[in-house]
Amino acid sequence: QVQLVESGGGSVQAGGSLTLSCAASQDTYSSDYMAWFRQAPGKEREGVAAIFSGGNVKIDYAASVKGRFTISRDNAQRTLFLQMNELKTEDTGTYYCASGFRWGAGHFWYRPASYHDWGQGTQVTVSS
Image (cartoon, rainbow, N blue to C red; front, side, top):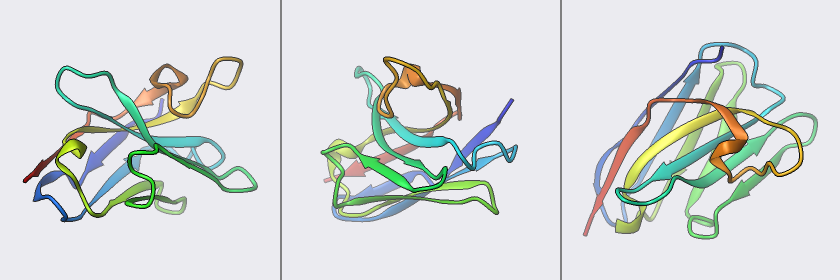
């Protein structure tokens, strides 16, 4: 089973930047979707960005972060990244790395139920 460990969270003022990392324990993700999700207190977990690199690279972003966040991966290092710029207070939450996409009907990159491997999360707090 893949183990995912996020790092890079912290506290930052609005307009600042952070880079999150997610290290995978096994080299099983190179042709699979990997994604970042976030969850704010009292809210549902939501998809932030996903990257698929099986052949052609496919990247998706939530509308709320498009143009500000950049997802990338280093397959040699088995690491997923999320570069977050122009952070807003509404970006505050716990950020989770996900892999192990469940291919099939009803599964989409932004659905938490579409992934079976998760990290423990890293907290991002953006203050005004």
